[in-house]
Image (cartoon, rainbow, N blue to C red):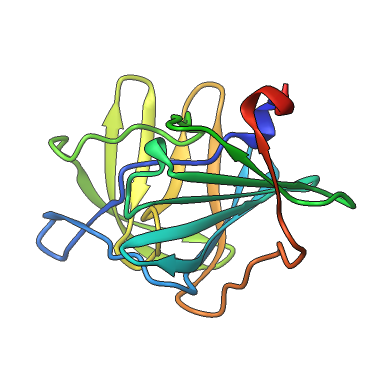
Length: 183
């Protein structure tokens, strides 16, 4: 699979006014738009199935949708992929893991409060520095809480976000294939 098919994951954490971390609650309709090294990506919560959430990632040529527990995208239960102008398909496997394009943030890290301004607004953030990485988190931002991330080879910047209104880009009937057929 191409690198673009990697679904983004990060621990879903942010900070309160006292600087304590708490998990952001996922809700259907939430969405975030980021630029990762100037490449746009949109991540949305587009549905719920019992206690699981449908999380959809939209890039320039690809839409990928996973069914997973809140904050647990690395162990998705289902995966649906759609390339532009093609029929969407579900890859059936018993268990699979998804790697992340986002930083792995430990809730045990300490940080500092910082106000930053981006194209989509001003954010009171909690900045965490780990080795050669910096990440700015806010409980105002849904899904991941990430406002900005910077390392020597990657920059992630929040471009826009919303608490409701996200809808799936996959509207067609989904075909099902096994992992062997997908190779």
